[in-house]
View (tube, rainbow, N blue to C red):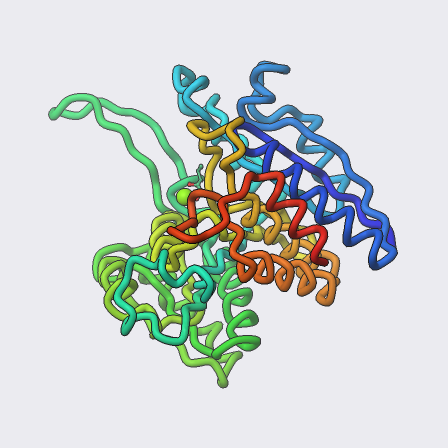
Length: 356
Ligand code: IPM
Ligand code: MG
């Protein structure tokens, strides 16, 4: 089969990690007889430098004309002087909105080979961790009305948190569908003791839950959840939450696995279309040093094969190879401890490709 993949390398370590994902995808296409047709697109700082805009129209069109998008990372201090709506990060929000990527899947998995990198005590994570954060991605405070106004306390700025039942239902269904394939537990996170939007969220999620009698639904306040994640992370299977809470919780969840440089993500719309990217950022401080960990991007490519192309075996082959390379002791510096074989970005990419 032929698949059209839009590639957005982006900034900082983005192009370096994308390069390694390329190698791995090329190995897959050879081994399994697929054709991946790549189109390189500009977004973020790279697009600002070339076109003056962080998200050129051609990029949105190119992405829409593809079956899936694979993105490295965007942003860096070079563009810090720009106003908020022109910064590289805006490109991400623009892509999410334009491509209607309303459901963001962020798995936080502890690789047993990286146990020592987990900052929690052994007893808290015994048997490993496997949490899936499902974050609403095109609504809420990130996309609500925003602006400035004068008040008697001086100038004020505001960002509105707003959710419609339609927005809540569609992302909740993704979370429940995922839970059905996992441990059948959804924790819906909100701040319903204070926020009206959270009360509607909670009520609507409860309605969706009725369609999934086998799934256990728990509601939890965001403040409690941040605490429960470090106190008893094993209680979680799928976490369903809003855009802003999901942004925060997914960073926390990934850190407790000790694998932040390892974690992939998928942003899905209706149908099979999706954008795939590592959870980590553009890490400008290590760009060009060969220290970047390409595993999160390679695992994002694996998620793309599974969720957009339905190629589960191929996806699994990548995951297995990543674990094998870890078991062989190879690590980039971010996850290395004494005794590991510290390897460069390209070496890790070569090893993962070779071992498929
Ligand atoms: C993320 C990032 C983005 C977000 C930023 C870079 C706009 O933090 O993907 O989690 O807030 O969504
Ligand atoms: Mg974030």
